[in-house]
Image 1 (cartoon, rainbow, N blue to C red):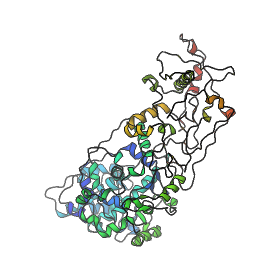
Image 2 (image 1 turned 30 degrees about the vertical axis):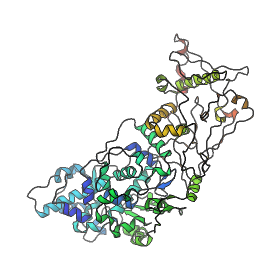
Image 3 (image 1 turned 120 degrees about the vertical axis):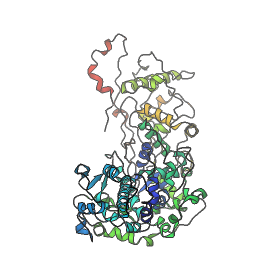
Image 4 (image 1 turned 135 degrees about the vertical axis):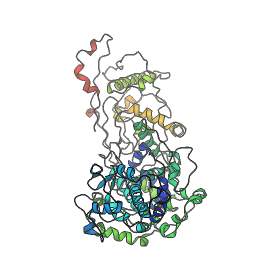
Length: 623
């Protein structure tokens, strides 16, 4: 809806004018990038769990990114039955007619909501000769649309709720509410809901989350967006992300987050002179600024969340020490306002009192020249956190195996078994001297691996007993006690490759080459090779600076107790309540043996008798 100049004074009084300036552009969000961040969101702490610690969106970010006021009364009340809970309240539709002069058509109404289209068609263009009363009606419609679409959008994404009637009834009093804390509460609630594996859609102020990511992580931001104004989220208004290869881009984004180190995040992006030159002075008023470090409740009607900035002190220029235990508010996450109406200031009185005492909970910050986590914190974090979400193959160097385009496009289990046998045979040939040629012939049919006198495949022991070079949680990785300032996995120069290579290209390779669940590299201890099978080790090709074979049998669907592949919104086990399980190495006699298939005869006769065996070559989707 276009912003008319006669409506601007009402928006300035309400503290929503800066947000309205963002309404002139349509924000597109990078869904794979947000999905990767949602996987790292923890509802217990309201923070993103990264390799180097925790970070989150705070009230400071809301002020800079959206230009919303922080201090004020909570955005609360009731969702309906205003005549029973409010002074001067009226039945919803009676009040609606008084405020807007008419009722929407019945086909535009659903319970307590009205379609966007009716507001857009009815109040889009303000008449040139409109009286002051007409201007106020159009201002109410604009504000209701602005709040419902930009800040507090739900999954419907096309309806305006009547909860805003008590607010727009008195336009002069809109400025006394804390819109910043309300929008942050709604963002937290949407992210907490997104951690449910069954949730596939995300609502809320996603432009705030995406802008926060781009400002905090320069390696993830798009290029050629150097000019910006206020609010700072306007910097990405014209950003148009790709919409192809979504699955591969999620894997690529997850891998990027798994390889971030402590110096890859900008702890104080708003301290630069360029930012201070465009920030509106009212955002930096002491009454708003002092609440940025308040550990208090965030309220948006029935959504009650907790502002736990004590866990992200580096974002305010301090040093992060060991945090206190997180506040358990799980029962609040189950409240959605359904099943009857309530007056929330009374029903959630305790949490409203926390917000009333917000000034007493402001944390002092000892600013330092180099903010970040302390060594004590990093040592604790490496021991308790589930830091990696990508499978083990993502941290290995793929250069020793050169595959043709035909091999890259094979996706079925049957074809990958053929490829595994072929590579196995090439490895056996390499044991007799000379370089190993890993190229796959185009017209070569599937062949049997060479066997020794005992009937076993020569040159290959049980894959579950290879030394895979894995690390358990809390171990020193790369020879550094904290494991933060060095590469996550130092394997044969792969760090140099990932720093200079194309992450998307590697993600496409790992997505095509894996195709199955792979055990989490940080949730298992290093398996040791038994003496009985040590004889097979001498047959393996010794290649310098290359990580050994995976702890995965390419001929059977991998069983992963920690399930490292997550759907949209999936998260690992809590870093504070559950230590990643230590998976035991399967015994030799327990492993299922591979059934060798006869080679293709070239005449089509090999298809007879195998038509009913298709299921054995397909990995069923566990979902």
